Image (cartoon, rainbow, N blue to C red; front, side, top):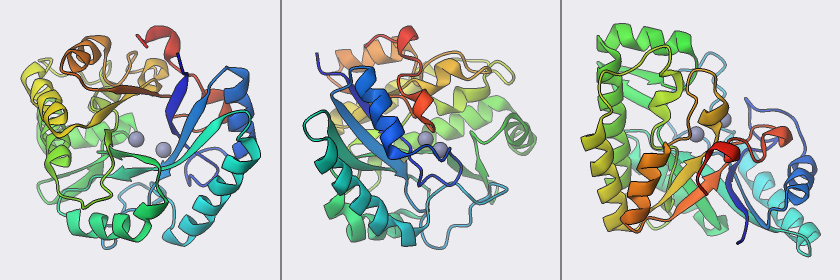
Length: 264
Ligand SMILES: [Zn+2]
Ligand SMILES: [Zn+2]
């Protein structure tokens, strides 16, 4: 079976490593991959202010042409050894659907493959990046009054991302649909939110989306499972949803992360 990684960051990531594309690709070839999608964090929509301390969640839009040009060169350089696809991980930011569609309309022709992810939540008039750090998550609990309320709001927002109209270049794959569990060992929810997750899977199935089966959570000390976990993946597959492994590597060493604990 073809070994694929559909979610990889790059030296264009403002919060990742400076490992070169060649290091990522050589590591993937050594691990017997036949196809990679590089999915750098797209620039955040115009008008949205990044709440992370260094405002480094997405790449600058000025870098986008060079990013795609670099990927075109790499496709050519490596075409005998591995297939490389040009992608982006696009944020779904509630209320910025038009700006996100505008971005996708500007650049979508250059995309082979892409992911739509929720990292930012809007609540009580404040924005927060839910996977940034345990400290930020703890502050969010103060604002939301409970971890459960963050989970509920997160799943609601993921569902909205699936339903959103982002135009013809909207990504076909939904990113790490249980990312809210990144700090679950520190801040667990009181219920598994099965009903909410089921609604997400049904919406994804009926609209033909794929799921990012993301290995990063496996190695996160406060998470310890893939995004989403195995039982959700099994349910998704029963509904006919395609699941695509994503390392979510932010360094070359991260290629392949989590796979040992996943059902691929
Ligand atoms: Zn990142
Ligand atoms: Zn992500």
